[in-house]
Image (tube, rainbow, N blue to C red; front, side, top):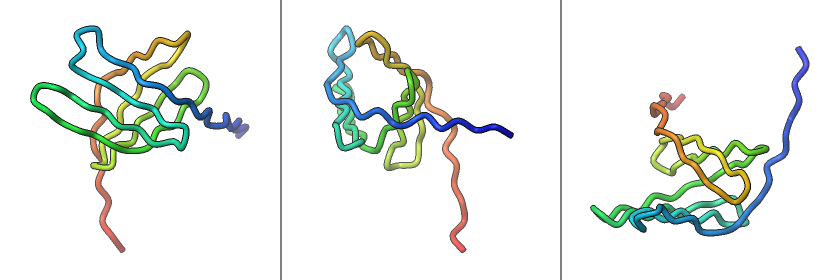
Length: 87
């Protein structure tokens, strides 16, 4: 098996949905903050950008995949949360 590792690319900036209801801040330290206006919600976690693929790993356990290309951010649906038992 041949595995190629693509390094994480740190970025920083704030992207806002067209209606202004959602704001996503990517910080250069690999953390993110997502704010939703209605109802007010705040999500935090870590992100990894590999090429144009963005993965958001929320502190709550959710994972969201998106793309960041040409300065445009697109976010897909939340992936299923996976829980593991502690040993």
